[in-house]
Structures are given as C-alpha cells and as structure tokens.
Amino acid sequence: MKGRYRWPDGVRCAVCLTVDFDGPSHETGRKLRPLGANAVGRYSGRCGMPRYMDLFERHGVPTTFFMPGFDAECYPELVQEAHRRGFEIGSHGYLHESWELGDEEEALLERTHDILTGLMGTPPTGWRSPSGRKSARTMRVLRRLGYRYDSSDKDYDLPYMVEIDGQRQDDMPELPSSAYSLDDFPFYRFSMTPPSEVLEHWKQEFDTLYHENGYYMLMVHARSGWGSGTPARARIVEELITYIKRHEGVRFFSVGGLADWVRENHASFD
Ligand SMILES: [Zn+2]
Image 1 (cartoon, rainbow, N blue to C red):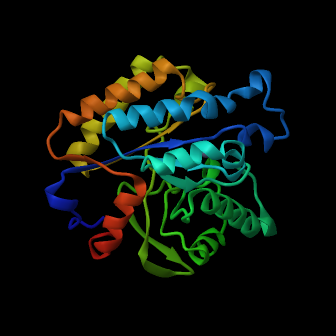
Image 2 (image 1 turned 60 degrees about the horizontal axis):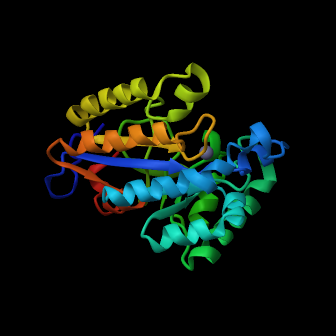
C-alpha cells in the first residue's frame, strides 16, 4: 500500500455514503412477481430513494445512486429528478444479475448504459456490480462504453488503479467497498440487528478508518426488507452524517467525484 496518497486540500478522510437502488429488478430477475412480500424493491421507488434524496440534500452531502436498468425503466422520473438535483447515477446491472451471464453480458451492460444515458441526457460514468458479480470481460466492456470508474471490488482499503489484461489503467480507478460491514445487507438480512446497533458499528468503522487510511465507503440499499429505505434505518444514516461531520478534515464525495480526484492523482495510488 503506497503511503503517499493524500486527499484534496489536506482532507484527512474521504467519505462516500452510497445508495444502491435495488428495486423490483431484484425479484423480477429471480422470476418472482414483485408483489406482496416480494414488493420490497418497489419501496425503493415509492419511498426509499425520495427519502434519501431529501436526506442527503438537507445535509448538503453529495452521493451516488447505483441503478439497475430495469428499475430505471420502472421509475424514469426518479432518475431524471436525481440527475436534475445534482446526484450522480451509476449503473448497477439490468435485472441486478447476480448469476454468470456468459455472452449476454456485453448486451446487458450496453442496455442499462443506453437507458440511463437516454434518461439523463448524459452517460453514466460509474458502475457497481450487482451482488459483486464480475467476469474477466466486464472491465473491457465498461472501458469501451466510456465508464471512468468501478466500485465493485472488495480487495483493498483504498482506491487503486484498475488493471485490464495485465495493464494498469492510469485513468480508471477502482473505488472498493472493501469492508463487508459497511453494507446494510448482512445486518438486516441475516442477523436482524437493530438500527441503533448498526449505527454504533458504522461509527466504530469510521473511528478506525478516520485514523488509519482516511477512506470510508458505505453502501446502503433504498428498499425495505433487508434495505435501509425505511424511516428508522434511514434515520441512522442521518445520525451517522451528523457524527462524521463532527470530525475535522472530513469531506463527503460522490463516488464519481472521488474517482475524478484519484484519476488526476493516479501516481499516488497503487
Ligand atoms: Zn445491488
């Protein structure tokens, strides 16, 4: 790990609080009708994402919403509103594919790319893999489509420069979400941890990373069910923002905003 990295203007800790939309694409891709108990993804569109846009705007915190293409087709007005309000929208699969795609992959990446580009009038520049799935060809296709960063891998404590076919790409950073515990999914899907304890946990991660390497990447989901779209769970994200803001030298970034800075200073990163 290089010791030379530093954040802009003496920033001591770079913070990205990101939201994966994970709407009805998730159930539809698994051949489930997004109704009844399987309607938890529709909550993202009706409540979760509007709630998070208001929350982040209220606190002046930039963020990135990662959006599956199918969900963008279901809620085009949300994508347009988020874009109009200055939030970044990144790609996140079409049907939130967590399975091996084979030859289909390229067409699906293009499909979501075209949907988001059409809605925003400008192409998305970032991608996060749905369920962490990637293939050997993913980065090559993203590069061809003009993507400028990836935020999928879980193998490092800091951003680093992507390698494609063994070649370091000085203009394409990986912004890893490496701490599995900085993800709401395991807490609300497996251990049913109360939000108050999740907040303590995320604060503890912050305390450590603030002093250690200054890179904090949180990933929550806008849905109900195992997501953080619902009021009490969104409330702890708000409390986390308040807590983080009390620390000196912290700056909040959208993932694309931080990627821009890493790209411009690529020599300082592995
Ligand atoms: Zn997802």
